[in-house]
Image (cartoon, rainbow, N blue to C red; front, side, top):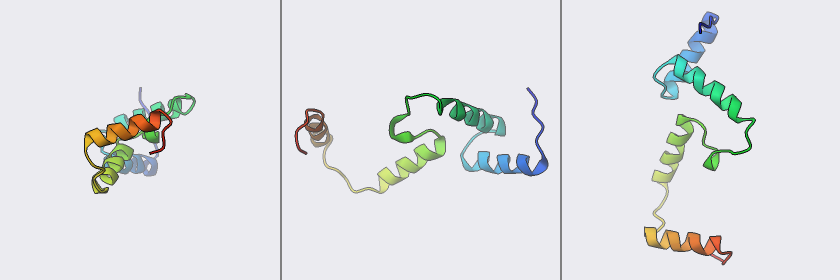
Length: 87
């Protein structure tokens, strides 16, 4: 498929594709189409993360967060929450 865009729109798409970490404008546009299609689907990805940039930002936030304790403590807390117990 060939799509012709006005120069200003093409330049904007190139900038956004690069900023979001896509290998090409084609990959970026394909992701936009998939994202648009997914908006109609009821199953949203965990945390609403839909793009590579959103995932990168979530990882940055997590890395900057203080430690939560051991993995065992975290899973024990998650089990209590899943069972309806107070945390």
